[in-house]
Amino acid sequence: MAVDSTHPEYDAVADKRQRVRDALDADKVRGATTKYLPKLGGMEDDDYNNYLLRAPYFGATARTLQGVSGLVFRRDTQVTTPAVDAASALLNDVNGRGVNLDRFAQTVFDEACSIGGAGVYVTLPQAASAGARAYTSLYKSESIINWDETIVDGRHITQRVVLKESVTIRDPDDTYKRKRIDQWRDVYLDDAGLLAVDVWRKATDIDIGGQQGFAIVEHYEPRFRGVRLRLVPFVPINARSIGFAPEDPPMLALADANIDHWRQMADYRWSQHNVAAAVSIVIAAEGFEASEVKVGPGAVIVLPDNSANVTTTEFSGQGLQPQRDAINDTVGHMAALGAGIIAPEKAAPETAETHRLKQGRESATIASTVQTVSDGLSQVMTLMLNLSGITGEVAVELNSDLVDSKLQPDELRAVVEAFQSGAMSFETLHYNMQRGEMTRPGIKAEDERALIEAQMPALPELPMFEGDE
Image (cartoon, rainbow, N blue to C red; front, side, top):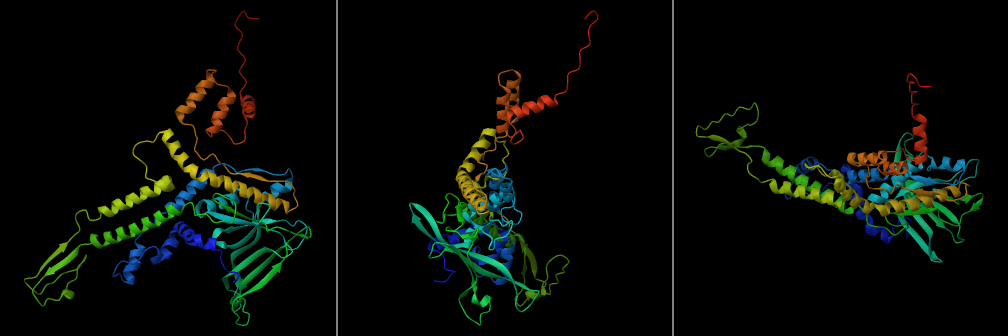
């Protein structure tokens, strides 16, 4: 088997992942042309290009992902680390490129929530030096092409993972030109159970005398404090579990509906274009040549046949209504699949309770992904710190309060009145305002009370009445 061989479980979900990946990007859907938008019967290339260009793409999949991600990350990710300054410094730059943990966590969550997963590789420095540290590299699920596991004492132990990468190299024929090529990073435990890494490229990309196949361009054996590792530092994070077994993309049904909606829009716009323009008809004696007639603004029609008659046909009736109805049905279907945030506003106002129920329904589908990503990132960050010389564990907790619990004006008025009347303590008032997202994050009730008292202006002294002592 060659290094680019893919795992059977990878192959089983590859097309599903690709459909979701494409649905997230309008240009990819259009670029796939006949894969998602087949030609109509008898359609020539020029007609098909116009058919393709006229179809607007309604990015429901991407909008839904943005909305769900915004719901999770509207509050800061909570992190517990070993009590050393170096730990905070590492978490402020988890990938060696200045990306902090919160931004990194959002990228991992977006991949898990849409495509169904991602993987994080913890890379060690190849050479020991002062200040050397481990850092993380994120791999999309499509790049995790093969793996091998074994079970030891009931635990799944990774023996090998093959990661497909795309890199830019200098063109050997032109110093100033760069080209993109694929390479494969084979991370494995050797016969002695020690970590090793091989980087493979196609022989044609490294110009090995016209050879075919693959060749190793780099081999190294990562070490921590001079000692080789006995584990593969890679954590696969799915939507609902941590492990290599692929899961169907959570947004697959929405992506399919989104692409179907695009096909419907293409047919509708094509039909609309074809029937909207008036068609000129010339009724004339036999032998009249139609090429002699010009129509359109500014055109003058000269008919040599006195008996000729010119008329037009225009579209009327409800021929396009069934297509519009089908499109509206699909929009409703997308909303039911999790795209409620893109549904048209209703004329009637929505009650706060109805709004919460809708959000609660959506949150139920992503709560497990929030927990899984939190658990996976806890493992990743603990591994990164440990391989950077910092002992201890890291706990990462993404925001799991997915329902917008902001207080409505009448609710706020009620709790304030209860506090003012003595029916509610300040601590209970502060608790309700925290749940309603009306206080600063991390401020406790006693701290808020102290700030209020410190900022309360002193009451002026009352003047003494005449005769008072």
